[in-house]
Length: 187
Image (cartoon, rainbow, N blue to C red; front, side):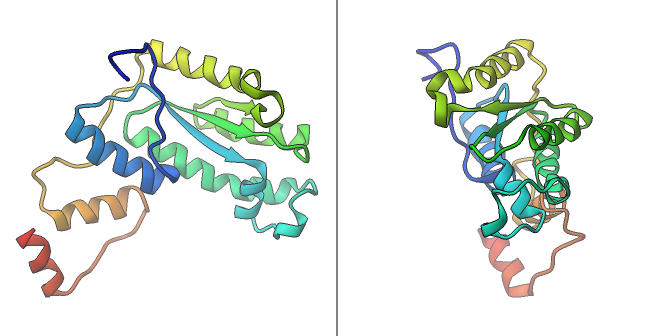
């Protein structure tokens, strides 16, 4: 695809933690890829659930829960930035989303140095995602993203696991039995 098009879009996997980390630290490292942008896709519904709203209450505006759920999105933005990749936030809009909810998402994103856009493609087709696409092209063309891997390729496996746990998942540390450490060393 890179030989045939000016822009190539791929899905790294679920989440800017598990999927994004594997994409950058494994696939990009081994394939020599250097992404120019990352799109973090979220929904107001999911952010409200992260803020404690029950499924049956998701269609009701709840700015307090949405604000609490924004910490999850902020973590994903920070993870992308750790890799040196400029992210764009795409909020998939559904009919129950209010203007106040969309506004509440944009403000913390701006504080993190990223733009959040409404993606209304479920209702409008491709035109509903055009604003997100234009933002991605602008970032790609800016050259601001510079891939930084979390660890050197020759780092021992146990230390790679420790680095991922600390940097991506914010663990204080990891522990493992000697048998596990020995097995990792043998790998």
